[in-house]
Amino acid sequence: MKLLKWLNLATGLVLIVVLLIAGFYLRGLVAQQTTSDHTTVLLNTNNGCDLNQHRCAAGLGNKSVSLSFKQPVRYLTKIDIEVTTNGFETELVEKILIDFSMTGMQMGINRFALHKVREQNRWQGTVMLPVCISGRKDWQVTLYFETKLANYRAVYKLQVEN
Image (cartoon, rainbow, N blue to C red; front, side, top):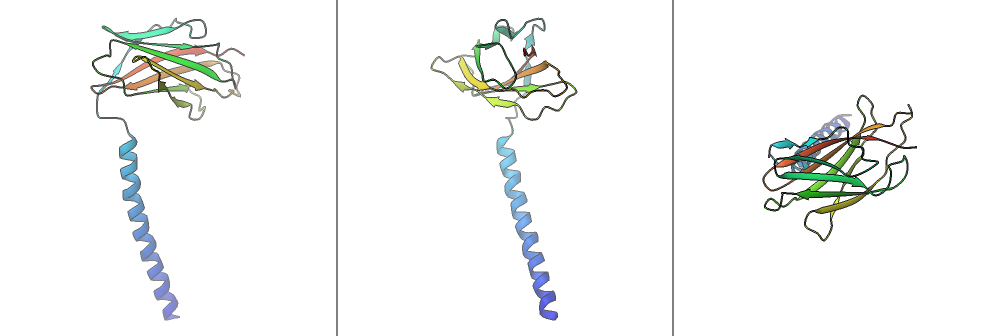
């Protein structure tokens, strides 16, 4: 009986040590994945721009970013995206993410990384949106990108076609 108590105590102590080590390791991984400590600059967008019809731009001063879809956005269909940046030559854009969400509705994680194409200021990717079971079609498209000097964010509106 005494041996069983000691075995349980030893197992518990080993488990606590393993959990502490895992916690420190995971904390380090999370710290590496967060964005840089730069301030995030919100770029001005034209809320009347229809992404399903043409390219929409956002900007501030001489810096701008434009977003376009190669075809109209429909649910459960692969959509090719292109992003073009202007005025960021000295800062070199390091990463671009695009996030699709709905105000007041949990639609899961719909965040996609874009990849740089040969031209210095063009990025592309492919996305697919889930169907909203309530029938809503209004999405918010947020473009996040990092440079060596700052982080930027542009928010666009999108009405999905069916």
